[in-house]
Image (cartoon, rainbow, N blue to C red; front, side, top):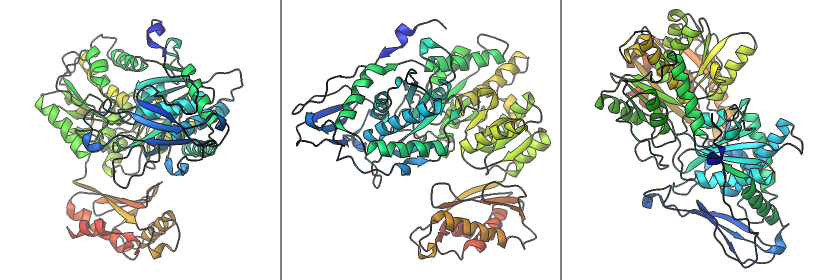
Length: 613
């Protein structure tokens, strides 16, 4: 790639003036900082949102974030006394950090403020220096990107200050995808300041507009739960030790160390090359294919113009490509029925060969064929398993716990592979595939029903765009070998997949204030419920407990199966039921209800309604 760094890399302007007593000034967009007079020795930092949901029309341009800082020159070494107290560990969501970044939703108190983000940035810097065993002579580099959320830029600048204040070089990518951020730790191209030592994606996936969060990467992959806990514990200590001097210093260091790079051009170019290679290095292997994209106003709008069109595809009819953090059209979530209906309708209206839909940060995806048939959940897994097993016969396909019995039969009996059903959570599934390879069991695909999917060939990168590229590869290679028929090629790949006639997911909530819990945790109560269910089904000849199961209680019977498991983070027992028909599903529901009805701390109203209907 040509060395175009002169156009690509530029320092981000930030004012370098120090805090002065009795002074007032504004900083650059996307938010302004204001300094006001204050009592000696006091410095206050509060985040004031001017956003009102019902009055926003163009959220990325129509408002600024304002942060008031009260300071005095003599207070430079004084611990900041007026920061809101924050329980940092409550921000952990498995292997991610998530919180409320904006006002606007009743009952959602803001806990992911700019100072909290700055502390997290500084904590990640400390963690990374320790992980990389970097000495004083090494300048570590971190890339930061974000999805279309309206709080993204303020959090990007805040976390950048935390990193820069700790002495790291910061490279901002702007609007980006989660897979691209991980990829930046692997790319070797100094013109684009790659590879970076660590990477941060600012996203909360498909959650409401007021939420946001962080995902972290090194070249070894995404950070795990233990790492996130470590970072949050460090962040809380740093947050409680903020001083006027340290905040001013981080501001000054940020002005000197932050650069911007158009890394998405590198990432999209690699996707284009992958499809061309699969088709025998044809320049436009998708010429004549009509493919529509639905980005849900998230970060995936690039796929139509920067990936499909260079490959020759027609993309007219693509929708919601413009980033809009209020997500006005539908939730950007391939599991959402409204979202899937929208892309299906777009395919049918435009008589397209294929439809592609992404979640907000493009680490999940789904597809729709020319007839409107959805490739998501079990069908998407079956399709990807078929493609991967053609390339790697006999390999193990790792999935989450709620995949169907029909999928197992398809993978093992039709495709000749092995189905390894594991715990829910995309990081759990990926880590399990990596573990299997480490002990000699070949696995090339780890994929969840949610649309998260990672391949060994792609460095176990959780990448919704790359999953779609594998599907495009199949279309392109089929055409190159003289097989036509558009998306009929894909339909043929899942022929023989037995799908349930009825499927449902119910959520049984645990009342944490109920006397039944006796002051214990909801986790303890939930485990007690599961143990009771397990013992109660042993005497029923119609039921069979799964011989190998890694999460909850999975039972087959009455022509179907159910799985009752405990949510990792919420006081909920999700119940999945699949059966040949509604009648058989109700029978399975009644089995669960009979076992759990004596637990008064468990809200079974959803299950009561289900079996009653």
